[in-house]
Image 1 (spheres, rainbow, N blue to C red):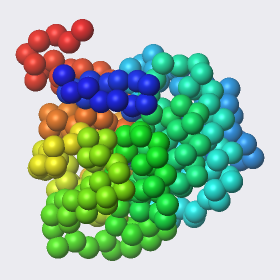
Image 2 (cartoon, helix red, strand yellow; image 1 turned 135 degrees about the vertical axis):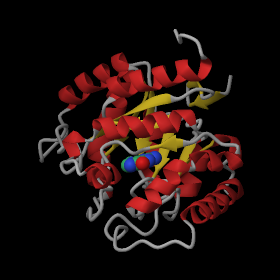
Image 3 (cartoon, helix red, strand yellow; image 1 turned 90 degrees about the vertical axis):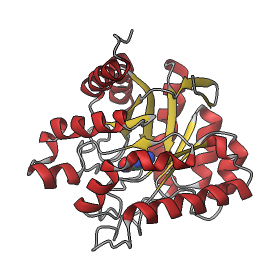
Image 4 (tube, helix red, strand yellow; image 1 turned 180 degrees about the vertical axis):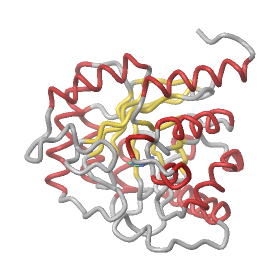
Length: 285
Ligand code: 9MG
């Protein structure tokens, strides 16, 4: 057992959990903003999708109101709050699931925690001014993701001395920064940030070496769902990348990932369960 506290809920991270992606943005790269009608969030549709994801096996739902796809333009804090906070409030009231708030904004971190979020998922690894302090005050766990640059420019010829070493150095620095701000190491989850300032070769090297990131002794979160690395290898459009994504899920499970972040929960939950059964040489209940 590796019990991890997500606000009021506890998950055993000794095996892989499925995190379902609920993008509440008009311009999500892979789901076309189906939960947002351009002017406002479609709360009824979001709740139906949340219920389906939970029924399909998601134990965590990641709710985000800012598109971080390559080239995305920043969203205002007001807009991000309007998109995300009603969704968190409603899901916290209706469902027994860990709610992850996908944001870098200190004010949103604070307000989401009050409404029932159980995890802070920050693609900027609490790098924004005030984010470390805001996260520290919530007592919630934090997923620190690696990104080189910013979403607007991150895919403009990213370079590393060695991507694995550079990502590890980044984690070492952010873990220390968290600890200095009162966020205990035991509250942290690490994510190498597939597609965030990385070429396809960088992504493949990371995928083949996820297990090296266990050196930090922290749970790992892996997100490859529908991403361009799959398109680059397979020459598939975004809606044709499920099989490739499941291959990376299997590799992540075999290398001990605690959480996989995906759009296609049902298929992923099956792939995770099958992989765990083989690893345990036993049928998983
Ligand atoms: C918000 N977001 C988009 N992709 C992601 C990934 O790979 N990991 C995490 N933690 N968040 C992500």
